[in-house]
Amino acid sequence: MKARLTLAIALALPMMTIFSGCGDDSGLAQRSPVSGKVSYKGQPLAKGLISFIPGAPDGRAATGQITDGKYQLTTQDENDGAFPGTYTVTIAARVVDMTQATEAAKKKGATSAALPQDFAAKANKDAKNEIPEKYSLPTTSGLKAEVKAGSNTFDFDLVD
Image 1 (cartoon, rainbow, N blue to C red):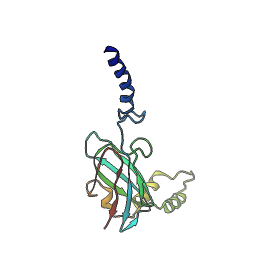
Image 2 (cartoon, rainbow, N blue to C red; image 1 turned 180 degrees about the vertical axis):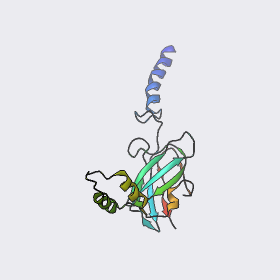
Image 3 (cartoon, rainbow, N blue to C red; image 1 turned 135 degrees about the horizontal axis):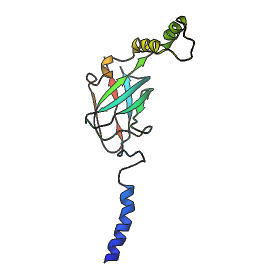
């Protein structure tokens, strides 16, 4: 009887380790894959950044680059997804024209390959939004997502 119990425990321990939810050596809990599409006025968003901001105060955000309207989220490792939970979603798509900033810096005598910080900051401030700015702020985006265990797909069709 005792031998059977010992055998059962010996067989169960490796299985518990496999299914414990670690998933990787980051020390973080299991993340769920999250991907989807982002469009603006029915057209795929060419480039942008999507962020899932957790509702829980101890939560962890996940982000992804939008390319040709598609994205995958990253929390720790590339495309590892997000933790299950409720999120506010923000989407930013700004086109920064560094040409004018570079020319202005050269006129002021900048000789380094790196653009001086004040010129880069101005270029970023003057960047053109490809979508309404409301989508880039958690307080005004109006976008929500509930990530669940397993694979998740969230598509966002943005309008004015």
